[in-house]
Image (cartoon, rainbow, N blue to C red):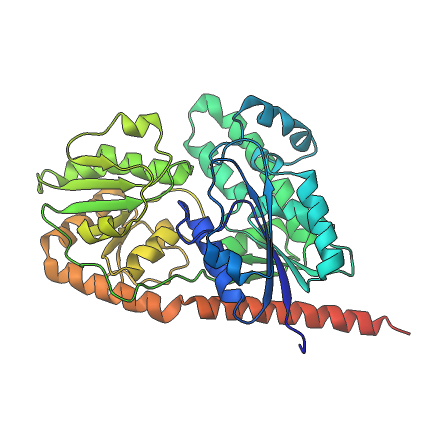
Length: 417
């Protein structure tokens, strides 16, 4: 392509390298990686309680547009007027999280930017931003949707694990997500997922969808954290606890895994680091359990911890938190779901177990054996450095763009007189 490829990227929140959730950090890294060889414009939604993108992200883009939306970042139903405003969207078949992120002014901006800036690719991050892809005309930019996590699968998880009285609500949510995401998959030029599990789920929704697996990248710090951690030993889990899978994992750690490990390691501590801890978590705080809330920097907690634990039982996509812990040079103990798409080998890059007993045995082995702790930390970091660089992630997106634009050009010339 003679001229620089122009990519208009849409995000449901401000991308930041220090965002409190993996989605915000990964989109920021993607913007920076794509901007090295492409002309990137960024449009995003922002609530009053969300910080703006960092200067690094803004400087990388040719065009940046912020659209304020009402409400608060962690809720689609508060304040109440925001929930009521989403009802027409839900009546039209949109899940609540999607309907709460509809903004007519933002849709107009996308349409105007396509007409004036003329991007080659219009890319939506997260299913909620897929509702803006119809701003592209039939012969306009190629439309790409990145499924960070399929809402239909997440709602089914919530339905299975909810109390009986709440299951009909989550069943309705799963039905709405499935219909909405099927329509998206069938209407766009390509979908991107992070794992082959999610790719199979997209193809189950729409067998004719163009679904491509592009794993996330991760920033590898130049100097690793201390692989042994401090004394007394501590387990570390990081996450935004507004996200239900993170909250579930935290409760599992607090209520079952930590108490059973303390039988052998009475001085063991648990560090739960991240924003949005609900009252049910905060009530459980005790001397051996630290719930930090939002922190300016996770690094001191990585230095302190003996190992990173990720006992995730629900949710989909790739877990940025696990990639970042491995990149930092910490030993990791995790469930199979937590390492989905990370290509880790049990016993070589991390220890993997599906149930509480297995996770407890694995964590105990790592705490007991400093040599094992160091070996896993170094092997995990080397694996991430080899496999999940942002340069290769951006190159995979660029290959996809090239294929889509070539296909569009071929279709246009085939129809020419």
